[in-house]
Amino acid sequence: MNVREAENLYLEYCEFRRKLNNKTINAYRIDLKQYFDFIGEAAFDKQKIEEYITVLHRKYKQKTVKRKIATVKAFYMYMEAEGMTTDNPFRRIKVRFQETYTLPRIIPRKEIEQLLNCMYSHPKKNTRYWLRDVAVVEMLFAVGARVYEISYMREDCVDLYSGSIRIMGKGNKERYLSVAAPSVLELLRRYYDANKAAIQKSGYFFINRNGSRYTEQSIRLMLKKYCQLAGIERNITPHMFRHSFATYLIEEGVDISCVQPILGHSSIKTTQIYIHVAAKMQAEILRSMHPRNKMDLLGFIS
Image (tube, rainbow, N blue to C red; front, side, top):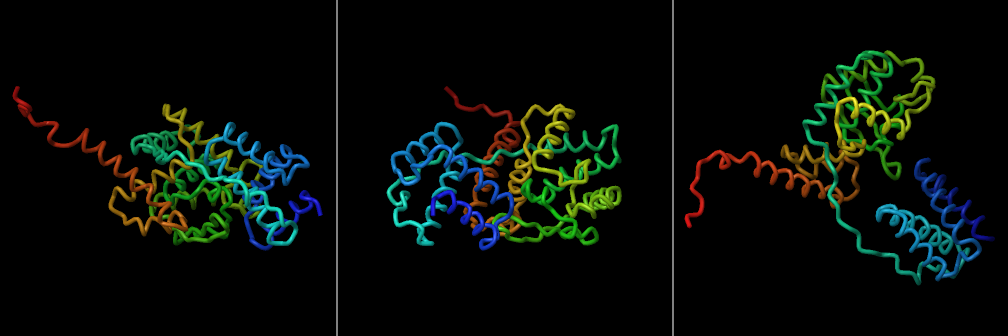
């Protein structure tokens, strides 16, 4: 059996045995194709694989490099476990590297308010697609979900009476979230009523003009459009709403152990990064708004 045949078996294993979602399977397929396009017939040549890893570091950000290497390494581990090879080159390759530690980017509260007010005052307010767009943005901030979780949300996962939302997260792990704001829940109901037939036919809760799933890329483009209309110069992405959601909850005193399951983090270490962001925001607040700033103090006497 050659490695390309093994690749197909591996992807089937990931889909049917590990029950990974389509987004993850497609990412694996793309990563492996890119790898084999570069590596050719030298699938067990350590030097060639090292060259490929170097190319990744030159071309991509660290997070992307880490994911692509992990995909290829997992494939070889599968081959070894299944007895397809005894020569796993990743046993002889050092792939760990020092990652740059960067804090999540968040959206200032005033800009979230500015964006939503722009959307609520839009000339096409209350049309089917306006209802969808503002509902998507409100959902991103209301529950802190990932953009693909919103995009793939099914009709039967949304309880429009209680506000309970069933989310399918990373690794096909389910979690339940709640839309607590009555105005957001009412918005979801109005959106659903205006698009009910198309939603029921599609099965997805958020749909495009063709009645298909409202894709992640479409959501990004929609958000960019409304940010421009609102006069917001910052490059705001859907994922920044998730970062902002978590950071502001912690700033308001919500315990990190409560934030972790809402975000769907398997490890609390992943959630702890938002503590650092909140601390940074607190420092900025104290610098700019501390009552000492308004005191007429002599300071150092020379």
